[in-house]
Image (cartoon, rainbow, N blue to C red):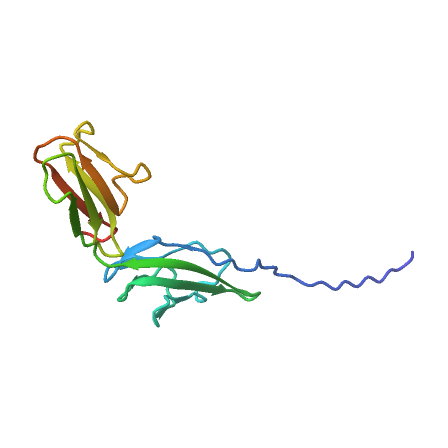
Length: 178
């Protein structure tokens, strides 16, 4: 018989995917209130998390909680990595202050002996989502002058067509708790 010599060389390879950074958080949060950040990253090493909350504070937790002390838009950045690479994603978090409802009004004409138009101007703060309520809610007795406005518009002009008592309320809301 013939003799054969066979030699083999082998290597064991470990292939890893590159990381992908991703997270979820509410787009609007209240100042001085804890905010949860939920990681949604793929292929990241558990010790590779670096959060930058855009306010000179950071965290290396996978799912951190953070309190924003200043209002405004904060660019929150998450960087994750593994032995192949690193990846970063950025989201804007709008931090709002408590809403404030206030308004002024102007009667046209100054006395109410005829159909009376009243201009109502919202003086709510920039963090407020506002809506008006007029009671009784009967558009046979009153109507909005400008058809491009609605009761969610900051400033409204109302024509009161009938004499009577009307309650006008401006409500300001946002994500901040009462």
